[in-house]
Amino acid sequence: MKFKPDPHSSRTLYDQLAEYISGHIADGSLAAGERLLSVSEAYHAYGVSRDTVLAAYRTLQRRKMVASVAGKGFFVSRRSASDTVRLFMLFDAMNQYKETLYRSLIDNLGGGYDISIAFHYYNAGLFDTLVTDARGKYDYYVLMPHFNSDVTAVLDKIPAERLLLLDAFPEGYSRNCAAVYQRFYTDAYEGLKALRGKLQRYGSLHIVYNDRFQYLPDDYAAGAYRFAGEFRYPVYVERDFDMDCIAAGHCYMAVSERDLAAIIKSITAKGLAVGRDIGLLSLDDTPLKEVLIGGITTLTTDFELMGRTAAELIRSGEQRRIANPWRLHLRGSL
Image (cartoon, rainbow, N blue to C red):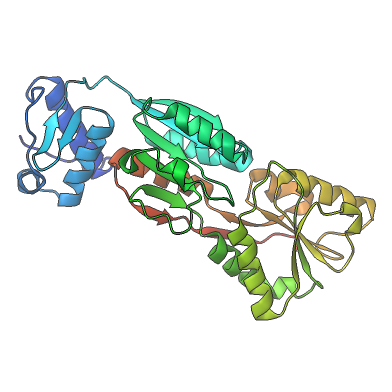
């Protein structure tokens, strides 16, 4: 079979190869039960790298068009090209920046996926129940394990080759599954370090999270405390913070959008000017924060990129762990 990739196509090389092979399955040139070329054979036959061949075969596996037999290779299965991949997504919560992540993931997956989505809202028991109920019903699982407690036993219920961990990755988790995640400890430390010159205008930084539907990883707090210790700058991570205690000369970082609104309300009631009398930061960027009260400085991960990377791993079947980069958006609030 002659494979001629299109150098002008926006599709990846492995996607083009997967479509080429699936076309031969669909027209009967490759019959059910027939063995595909080995990775080494295909490498020579198609003129592409071994990684490209393997990614194409994994893509066809996700579509249930190809099955892998240990020690024997890849074989055409009995499912047709029209079958969809059943995909289960379990998010922590839906908010504006998670919607950006979700839309990016969906848009970059393309067609051929039947998607179900659920939310656990930081309830470990509900997380366990939802994963247990979904087990065996889907071809691929995208889980967001946003907990400060150990939920690795729940993750182990899903075969590693069908699992992608999104946004958070449990420390020390050793299974060879795909992941696109934030490095909370490093991101917090490096982000605050990048803001050191701005923060020195204020007496201290208060990281505030009162919203019970908001998750602050222990690692993020640890990274903030590392910054505080290294640069001798007061940082306080405060749960159930009293907004009446907001005072001029200090900087406040809102973890949730609900807390951001409460902080702005308190600042306005006190007649303080953001960026002059008081500093304001927010975790996770959204379009609204670009324009709200002249622009709010944010420390954030790139959620659009996270969705795009996750979609690529799902389509290719690669079991790689990829740390998503953090971003600083410096605006007038600091």
